[in-house]
Length: 495
Ligand SMILES: Cc1cc2nc3c(=O)[nH]c(=O)nc-3n(C[C@H](O)[C@H](O)[C@H](O)COP(=O)(O)OP(=O)(O)OC[C@H]3O[C@@H](n4cnc5c(N)ncnc54)[C@H](O)[C@@H]3O)c2cc1C
Image (cartoon, rainbow, N blue to C red):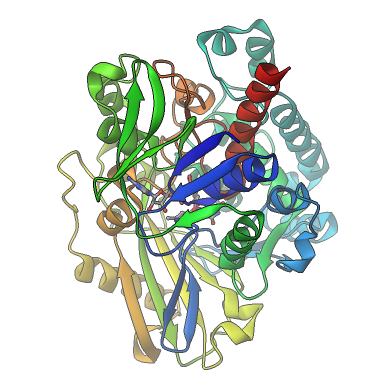
């Protein structure tokens, strides 16, 4: 039985572990934290339960597939609920636009906000559907193991079909003209930690996921996905080691042969999969001379995705103006992205996202709303020093919300602030980035680090910094993709 050591128990690591153990490998997962699921982390403050990481779940079939490939039923592990009118976008003039996967409802709202956009909406849906289908066919299943994968003519041809040279903002302008609607759609760039004014139009496929397939929530909290993966992994025989940090990837010549734990214990393995953030863990766990294709200089040149400044607030009140997902847009959206990416500082007039899962699931916080409040933040500078005073910035966020009629402060019962520095520290995330690399440059969007080391055989990568990209469904897919490489390899060898 071939042994696999996985470094990190995030969604990428867990989905790889389940797939491989189910295929007959013996898998050990080493996770430095006490919980599995990585950024998909449940937080309990008093009677209030929160999901820290992914609050917006799309592509439920990806999460289900991890379970169903083993012959089990996903429905026995968690219940995915489709949210109707899933996100309320509220603009500075007080108007709002509800994102919905119902075409008639979208069009009737647009008739008042952006009448030309209402007429073009069916064409818009057709185009984003086509973008998604091309990405699904050509990019999601690829694993980019060698240079030839990057240079393949079929990839080049596929790339040209997904509008890589147009920006996301320019793409949306073909269909909509009202700045409010453009900002609402442009926000999808932040789902991959990027700017709508720079990232390729390809990512309009995110609009397809939300406008056509819909947004989901897992009853009892999205963290149920991680809990389900843990219990399935254990059932299959995966050995899960929490509170166990890996300090080194062991090499024999140019081949990975195991891991060394922080306790000094050395564990042999036929394959090593790194789910820990590649940009941080690879340089830390492998000496630079052993990775000439991935030098420290190269990492320093990569642009990290945005990070987040998060407040978890349990309040003794139900705010009627909030939906499951609500976004309060700032006055100058473009300025915010200049602040984040060009000046690398915190916006003084930020767009504020709130997730209130108790809107759909009262049991999450029986006494009032469980507010996950997120503002986009720049990645940490190289020094790792936070560029803002957390308590002053928290107050600014509360003040901005109060100005828009959402006065949270007097009703708070429990509260916790999570800064980019804490994200970096807790999850080993390079510069606190949520999604690994940004996708602002065409190269970073399409040619992310591949899923296999170019310098060390037997060493593979999964997770947000690798292909196909950040976001919980993508990293779950990357875990399964990496598992398939190993499965194919072993079949070849035993044949
Ligand atoms: C605030 C926030 C909001 C988000 N919102 C959304 C959203 O709405 N929708 C969405 O789809 N995605 C969202 N994401 C992104 C999503 O959470 C991530 O893309 C995904 O969970 C990352 O999974 P991963 O497996 O790549 O890595 P991680 O979850 O980062 O897992 C990597 C694991 O490796 C462990 N590790 C690191 N170094 C070591 C070591 N040396 N030894 C052992 N273990 C180690 C870490 O502790 C961690 O548990 C959000 C993320 C954050 C932080």
